[in-house]
Length: 182
Image (cartoon, rainbow, N blue to C red):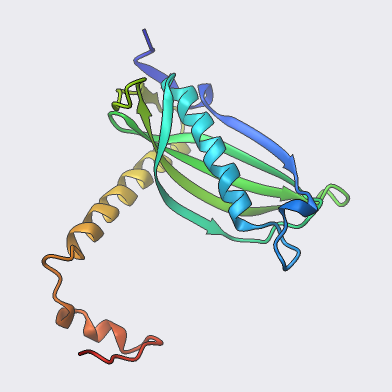
């Protein structure tokens, strides 16, 4: 029997990895796709640790690349459960890169992955609730609720069956777009 509620600290995951030339793009920076792969792995580990079962990625809500990561830097990813629903969890991940020669650390990325707990048959299963202990925990939980509400609103507002482009044409005038409607 799984616990009914878990502390955030019980499922936090931290990984560190040295960035190698094989991880770089043509510009000599670490490839964003490689970082996304690591983010997905740590989100899976954190969600599975919280739920006690296999988890799948339902969506990548935000990935904000803030600073490039250089070859030779030590990248550290810190993942925490920010929100839990019935079977879903929002995993917040902070990515920092440290220049191991100078010791300078920079914040490179913040991400939010929605993960869903599954049983052996692939059916969604209930996850433990979250024990919230700090103001930061409350802030992260509430921000996750707000992101979810905004996502639902966007889906409703721009649903293809009831979208009327004429209502939104005025929003295009200040953008790099040329209309050639047929």
